[in-house]
Length: 68
Image 1 (cartoon, rainbow, N blue to C red):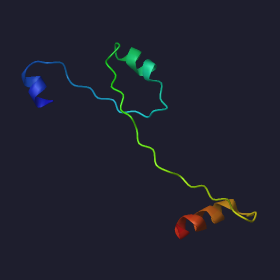
Image 2 (cartoon, rainbow, N blue to C red; image 1 turned 30 degrees about the vertical axis):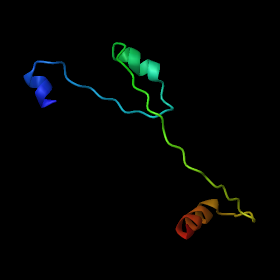
Image 3 (cartoon, rainbow, N blue to C red; image 1 turned 90 degrees about the vertical axis):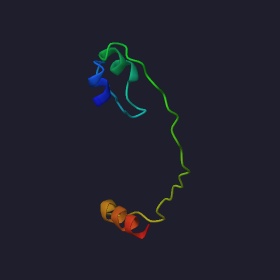
């Protein structure tokens, strides 16, 4: 940024956003700025279900987190 200022270039603006955001809305807001798409990473997820019903699901969730 300092070098851009010394060379009288426009300031650099970087926007990092989630994949669920509306890219076109941001692009239009910033005068149709260029967009760079980066492929994300995915990780395997295993889902476990409780075998019994818990009356206090918040407490059960906290207990499960600490067990992990």
